[in-house]
Image 1: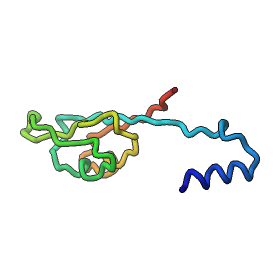
Image 2 (image 1 turned 90 degrees about the horizontal axis):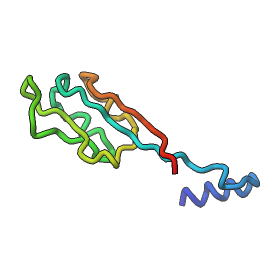
Image 3 (image 1 turned 90 degrees about the vertical axis):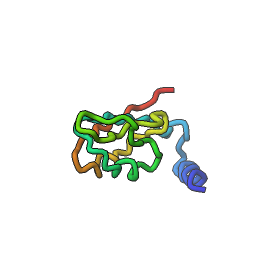
Length: 97
């Protein structure tokens, strides 16, 4: 429904829809494995279900988070915002087609 409204708006503005392509973005999350204490807040905050706690542990004995399905990451940075230890770095890259 929302897409139809967008194209109706374009027609009313007499614009060509080819000029308004949405950029496709892929994200990546880099986890500081030694800084992560495995609280799981980032896992719950991810709307795409990208993050999961690893079965392996870091040197402090914590199950750190990792990207379970990296292809689904949009780079929304919800995980980085809620991380209490700031051990997540989020990158966003435009995908060229």
